[in-house]
Image: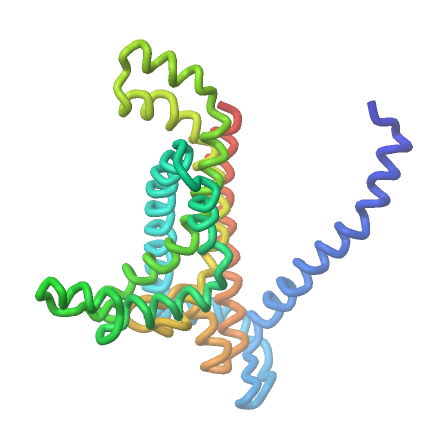
Length: 288
């Protein structure tokens, strides 16, 4: 059992890291909160004084706010659905003995290490280009008119691009969970005559519930701030303007620091609501 002296020593050693982390988080948040109550236009007069909650009211009542929230949630939910479903299927497949299993696993996981900007450029030019893209050639091979993905199916295209990048992460976590499953349970169920779907539904899937919860939690935190893929492909047009991209437009394109800061506070509030909701789910699954 740790003594009072050892606990005090541990707190002293952790204090610098904790103070640095708090400063790293609180200073930008405090500055954002400070500017959200001011009318600050760097290129058009600079600091024009306090405006109270006017920036918050203007941001939330603008015609672009709720569509941006809806686009953000659609992308997050779409990516979560695809990565969880296909992540489970890929994890089960990769757990099967096969020739070159290690190489196959590396190839499946590799897209996660590609930068989001590079991923978006590859999909935009190599796959989704309506003239020279791979999808266009496939459509033409079947006598169909190529689809202009980034304009006709913009949200679906963003979901596809982001899912391709995050699917390896989900697969890796779920594969690790599957490998921790006691094979004797599956063998006993198979000997009792249980079909594969029943073994999956009653043994494998319940065992994966905690891993799925962790995947959903981590991915949601990062997906709420998606930006690079949209900037490279659609630049927020065709209904793909997320809350993060809307803040970018207010701050850099409109040069309205106060309005953009108010949007940043809204984004923090939305992220915390999602985090609290997901943490409750995580807690229930971990306690089960």
